[in-house]
Length: 90
Image (cartoon, rainbow, N blue to C red; front, side, top):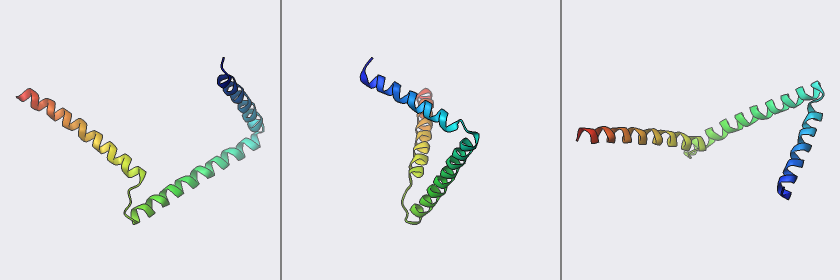
């Protein structure tokens, strides 16, 4: 076993023990869950605000590019389907 594998295994073991200790107390586990929820809500609000600001400046967001990618993929599938139908007609 290489040093990288052994270090990774040891780190995973230590992090597992740390998580067990952290979540051993129900009150502490609830506080951690609440903190994670707060962070997630904050990130969602930040993303929403960032998207609005980007659109105000007429800049495309990452989500816009993802949406366009999905649309392009759908169009490519449709073109391929139509091309196959056209080939059968010929």
